[in-house]
Amino acid sequence: MADKTANTRQNILAAARTLFRKHGFRRVSVEEICNSCEISKMTFYRYFPNKIELAKTLFLNVIEEGYARFKEIADSSATPVDKMNEILLLKLNGTNDISEDFLKDFYSENDSGLSDFVKSATSEIRQRIVEDLKRAQKDGIFREDLNFEFFFYFSQKITGILNDPEISELFSTTQDMTMEMARLLFYGISPPGK
Image (tube, rainbow, N blue to C red; front, side):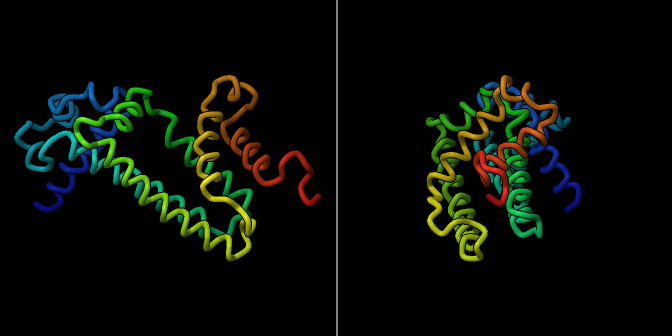
């Protein structure tokens, strides 16, 4: 019975994730989520009291998955440039199939408290990442004087740049584009080692 319960919960989360990413949070109803995973509303409400709590659970799952992947990359034996490339790809791939409605809904849904929840959860995960980066800084991977607040601001802007269709046209693959961004971040326009 526990397996069926876990599977049903995961199916609801998977259906919601797909629908929210495609259409946004506001435009998707509980009924549509239920239809997508072929369950009744009564079954839905056994697992989640409402769509807001489902969205919060989904958001936490997504950021925890992203953080686990970030840690995996950061703890790997790859070079700093390769790590940055992987982190940029992670960030880019995480936003590729998200509709603009989804982002607007999740970050501006004030009536339900979802926006405040997202800001709080994002702040917590950001703090964990900063702690990881500071450890890496102590290990000599980053400059001692690196301003992490600027780094985060800049990394948010990079995602927008990498999602720009005009930029995408300059490269044959997403991997080439993110690798160029990683090299630019680490080396500027100077040849490596200079």
